[in-house]
Image (cartoon, rainbow, N blue to C red):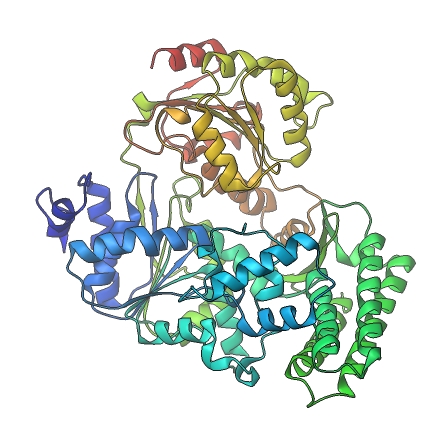
Length: 633
């Protein structure tokens, strides 16, 4: 297999631009050995290692059933459509590959028909998109909504014509034989390599624990790319959640059943309207949007207790009304089961005394999430690995803290795994410069955005834009964007004003833009070359001390006699910072400056942990030196 990575090997012969890299070959060898010995392996492969090829080659050469799980649907599509076919062709691989996503990523023909039959209660622009979906439905072979190019991913039409685990009718569906999800699963069962994502993999774990049929077939080799996301995603699936979207979808389906199958049951519409109304009331009772708070605290308030009681009553009414018509409509039968499930979840969430869990809520302008999350997933994950015989491989560019991988292995229950740290092949000493400017405002100081903008405008102007400004809060992001727009003539793009993909296209096309963004641009964004040569980060990305999940982890660490700041808060912030820093140098020809606007990097003892965890770039405190570096490209 190592010959595949040689200068005259299979990859170089078949893939234009392929360059042999020692770190890539070492990673591939370690994975080959792990597969042979059925040994779990954790690999941090620095940016530029080429980890995708490093795990694909041994996975395909192993001639076993392989499950590859990615951190996002975008990476999943890229891996399946671009990287996997290239490597398979280079190796003359004859096995079958398949792509499998969660249910809500596929068109549901039955729900599309129901929406068409029901008519009304849909915005005029959504009706137009519904007609487009019907046209696309007659052409598509796989029903993957990502391939419907005419309609945005966040269009309100998609929840109307896709199903979820909660509302799918399963084998009771009249169109079960034509179902795109069933076809995708069947293809996955017959495939040798299946590409999934972490959310689907973990949802599948939970479904199997409940004794239901499997979504993802049993694999011999499980590979997790972007594995740093796994502990937090696992926490979601090993806990419980009830969301306003689930409740309003339930109300919508009851209305749909009334308008299509059960026109003689007007009480269905009334109970659905009541549930919608009580859901909206509860959202208002939660208070200001854009906040994650402690559910234990808010449920102590009499006004919230009453709003929750009324919401439970509305759910009970939906359950009782649906019960009167059981057997007359598959759609309503499924709604009845969901009403019972949601009442059970609500009861569990109200029992706020259960130890070992964080109880929290989150709300935006229109929606809310109520959740309980386990403080540790290591035991559960270790159990799952024990039940699934095979080789488990975890890789990412950002797993280590201070050149150690024990923070990740401890969180996921992998203390016995073999670990490997591979540095990036990029020459950070000549390609980059790290600047921590002098005279920075203190974190959370009033007027910090104005000060930062004034300090950094000369750098941005000297670089002719081509800059990401990554913020740790939405408020700082908005304040900075307003300051830059008032002072600069170059394009200032702001996250949220349009979709992520469109923003990136605008940024690259402009050639002189400043993009001010927050969390969704810290990772999974790849802008190479001259288009991006400066990344500025407003401060170290510590989770807010008010975050209830963090508070619970801190308390749990204290009870175990640990130091929560060093064991919980610093490692999580280090990994988040490494993701943001990784946006700058994406290729061996890239050059650029990283500016971190936080004095704590040089004034606090823990700053050294952050600095040792970052790529080995030269450092300066002088913004003028940063400007000189940028202008001397």
